[in-house]
Each structure stands twice: as structure tokens, then as C-alpha cells.
Image 1 (tube, rainbow, N blue to C red):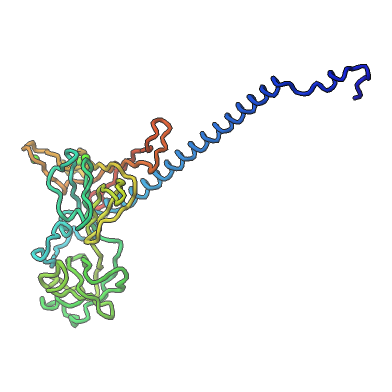
Image 2 (image 1 turned 180 degrees about the vertical axis):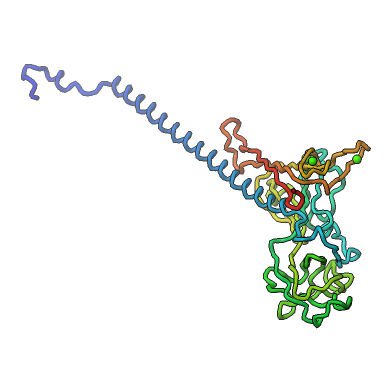
Length: 347
Ligand SMILES: [Ca+2]
Ligand SMILES: [Ca+2]
Ligand SMILES: [Ca+2]
């Protein structure tokens, strides 16, 4: 639109006043600050969500592994119903604790920030490794491994199972995958069972179980039974769970499997507490949930009724690596609880 010539120049081209510039600058600043605030808050939300997702993923992983071990505690096929010959040489080792397959479950209750209900067995800590963190519990599971193979024969016993001497023959198995010399295994044909250490694996999948080599070794080659062409062989080992400190001083959930060094399962586990579900009245279901040091008969000392444990309640606390909490700028942390039944002991 054309302005009439009579309109003064000042009216037509007045421009922008200083006040207007100031106002728009302030408005711009407010807008930028708002956008920045949204950005920061989104970034913060993202960091919290990311930390929480990591915590949840780690907790799921740890609880899954632990649950599998707890569920299978003491499970070794038809072990419960049959006589068992254990040829392990307990006099030849300081590692009896790791080989005590008669006790599938046991634990140590943290009674203060420095002590447990009894002295921790030396085998809980790998030589040179770090000790469990004060105030957190220790859980020990002894169980059959996933590695299992059919026994296909005893090549040297010439098919004669009637003579005790034939009980010493090598065992031939379908596959030696996952098995190696030094492994402790469990053989059973459902009328008898044997625990022994493999001292050598010969060609043809022949498992040798000599005396006088390896630790703990076998004190006899007599397995107490003949397994010519029948049965199943399974690797067995202990699993010890505890919270310890990593080399960079972070708390983490450790697992020691058999004679192997303890390994970090999951980083950022700051607490680990265990309760044992007891069936004290023999009806096959839990009627009492207690700590490891439970004194049921009131004689002033723990009962350690491990054979009455039918379930285990595990509580883990996990914390984020970074200080992402919006409340106090600390790491965020979350508790996770699961209850696992022991397969062998539930009806
Ligand atoms: Ca405890
Ligand atoms: Ca009960
Ligand atoms: Ca007692």
C-alpha cells in the first residue's frame, strides 16, 4: 500500500526503538533459556532412564543365573534314591568346602559390617582375590552342571559286571565336549552312583580315573558299580555368590565356580541378602523364612538345617555407575527380590 505524500517521513520510517530491541532481546533470552532448560531436563531424564535400564538389565541377568543354580541345587538325576560311592581324596586337599556335595546349599549370614555368623571358609575367596564385602551375605550352591552325556560302556570290563574288579574300568561316554581332565563328575545308572575326578581323557571318549594325580584326586579307582553301557555322566561343581570389590573399587556380584577364580557377574551390586525358606514340618512347603544363622531350637547357636531348605529368597541392590539422581546427585539404586524353589525338594 502506498502512503500518501502528506505522511511525514518520520512516521513512515520510524525504525525500531531501543526499548523494542531490549524487549525482543529479553524475550529471546527467555525463550533460549526455556529451550536450554528443556534440553537439560531431557538429557537428565535420558541419563536416569539409561542408568535405570542398565540396572534392570544387570539385575535380570544376575537373578537369572542365580535362580538357575538355586533351582538345580543338589540335582544330580536319580541321585536321591541310590547308594553313592565317592572316590574323591579328601585327605589330599584343603578344598573340601568346594567338594562337599552332600551339602547342596549353605550360606553365611552377615551379622555386622565386619563379621559373619561363622568364619568364612578360605575357599570362598580365590587365592589372591578379594574378600566378601562386610554386611552382605554369602551363598553356596553345589550342583550338577548343564554338561551331561550318556555312558556308552566300559571297554575294559569285558562285559562282566559281576566282579568288583571290573568296577575300576574306564568309562566310555558319548561325548567329551565340555569335559576335561581334573573335572569332578557324577555317574549314575539309577541303581548306583559314583562321584570321581577325571584324571585323563583317552581317545575313544574314554574317561580315566586313576589315583595319585590331580587335586583332590581319587583315593581308589573302584567306582563301586559297573556302568557298562548304561547311565549318565554329569559334571558337578560348587557355585559361590558374594559381593566383593573390583580392582577399581566398585562393588560387584562375584561368582566362584568350582576351583576356578571368582569372576565378576554383574557390576554395581551394592547389597546381597539371602533368606532360606524352611520346611520344618515335612509337608513339602515353606513354613518359615530365616537367615543362615537361624537358631530354631533356642540353644543359642545356629541350627544350620540346610537339608530343610526348600526355597531361597535373594535380594539384590544395584546402583548406577554415575551420579544421575535428580534428588541428591548420587547414583540411583534399586532393590530386586526373587524367590526360587529347589527342584529336588519340592513335591
Ligand atoms: Ca543377611
Ligand atoms: Ca512346611
Ligand atoms: Ca540352635
